[in-house]
Length: 130
Image (cartoon, rainbow, N blue to C red; front, top):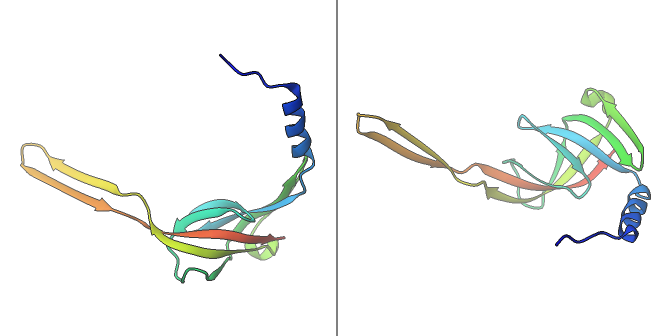
């Protein structure tokens, strides 16, 4: 059996979506990877120096803007022309899932098994100021 949604449920969700206040977002680059962040976003990036609780500022901002409702404003360019600052707090240092590297040569009797766990840092974005 499939459950049917009432029209009351859909009107509440669309009304809530249209009354959202604009939220600032930014696309930052760190360690060769790009992340789309907003205030309160938790990201896991390659390990950075620092202790849990330290403040981190992302200097390489590729794009920033505000979303909310039907209007979207976007700034794009080099970080000097944007004037956007993204700050976050280092929550913890962790290790990623284990990756197994297995090599084998047929008819040679050669096998090699190796594992790797990448060091990661969890960061909570505190603010994106345009």
